[in-house]
Amino acid sequence: MNLNWLVLALVLLAAAPAAAEVKLPGLISDGMVLQRGRNVRIWGWAGEGEKVTVKFRGQTLSDTAKDGRWSVSLKPMRAGGPFPMTISGANTIEFSNVLVGDVWVCSGQSNMQWPMGWLPDEKDEVESSANPRIRLFSVPHTQAEQPRDDIESSWTPCDPQDVVDFSAVGYFFGRDLQKAVKVPIGLIDSSVGGTPAEAWTRESYLDAAPDLKAIVYEYRESAQQGSWQSGGLYNGMIAPLLPFPIKGAIWYQGESNARRPETYETLLPALIRNWREDWGVGEFAFLIVQIAPFGKNGKVSPWSVVREAQMLTSLRTPRVGLVVTTDIGDRKNIHPLKKEPVGARLALAARAIAYGEKLVYSGPIYKSMKVEGDKIALRFNHVGGGLMAVGSVLRGFEIAGKEGQYVRADAVIDGDRVIVSSEGVPRPVSVRYGWAQTPQCNLSNREGLPASPFRTDRGG
Image 1 (cartoon, rainbow, N blue to C red):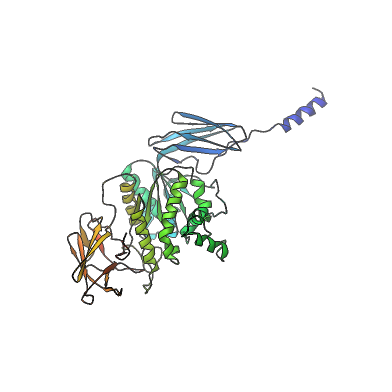
Image 2 (cartoon, rainbow, N blue to C red):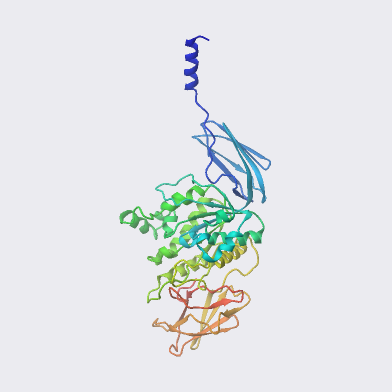
């Protein structure tokens, strides 16, 4: 070949389009847990027109990249693993450690984010945390103006090195759940301290709701623009997860909405509907942790209104559970260190709501009231083995007449009822329980699960 032909060949070679490597999102990485019993989408990026093939557990699926993207859908699978997976196109990516089980999202603000390593009394638990059937995925703290399609992270094992930086509530929940259901568990921690629920909800979803669009307007027009903007965390930390099927979500948040508590009763159910619609896997279980006692009590109790909204959401929304924490708060610390019982109660709720086990998973929830002379008789759901006072006598009940002035009340257990009265209120019309930022209340069932605060003049 003479010099002219050699130059021409080199020019043509340089001009030929190079095959782009197959690339994967952070969620699709070795060590991942895929949701059992559902179609599972595997997706990524490749050169235009490039054929990409995925091989996993006897399934071989291919797709041709269009606009640089490709995806395949694995048929529903039983739990198990670890299994190998091969993804090939211009290059080949091989995984050796993929599990199939149940995937749970752990979201909310700082009490969900609080890591195992920040619990001084849990060093032994960290050291003994290794479990090859549990995998962890941490979403970096990111808010965005538009929905993102990837996360710069990867799955890690559940071991002392990695669990120390992972959500304590999420870990304890996953530990207890895996022990009970005996399938692999994947935990995705997508939480950020100090964040309101509107930041975790798609802005267009808020804007379409008459009761919530004022929140969007406030963020657009006020100095809050650029802090935790409405929809910002949804775009940065929820939207990239949406193609990945899940079993359910646990949610510990609400403190940051206490400045505007009256909207939370609408906002929290809207967030749940938003996530369920966008995930497209049906009414997955959504488990709420009621905010814990903290701080001084005053005449106005916005935290009580938030707790009420959380309880009412669990009553009005299908497949939603409530974990009450009135007995494990810390009036001097907004971040109570008793995370293990929170995770344990979440696991109980998951076993009942998501897995259909017949067990007592909730403390007493107010059902109805009846005026009986100068007393009011209260009935409850989730009585379990029976009502009980933790300690000698019931505390935390107040009673009011038609003028609405509440006073401390005497309360006694009568079978599956609580009878409430006060000498100063001869004609009572309403009762409330635990209605304070830091309530001193002690009604539970015999399974040791505390009753939720409530007021009878709101109902369920």
